[in-house]
Length: 147
Image (cartoon, rainbow, N blue to C red; front, side):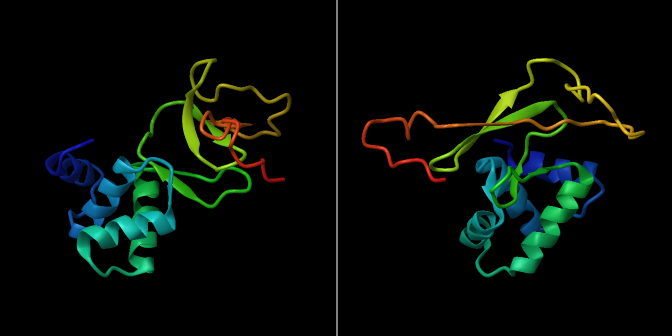
């Protein structure tokens, strides 16, 4: 978990002004990997008090555009954000509780998969989403998977 000074440096290196809302959002993303927007808003409000939804959305968009955070949206899930950027990793999603974990790419550099036909695109990324049931939901008393 980066210190406040390290978060400030990340913002400056991305040519973004250091503000309390930006620091709070960046801190929330680092502290809560794969958090959805509403959760991040809650964490920021716990830290700063009242802050608008739009302010958090704007900060997350600026961070995504600057490459400070990664926006992911596994099929059937709301948008989520993570601080792990600049590498080639994928995700595993629990079919029961929706928890998400990082999975390192088994193949190597991005894109780790080659399409059979790229249709002329200059492809720079491939996403893989693994689905299954997490250890917590695999217990005998766990709820049934949703369909």
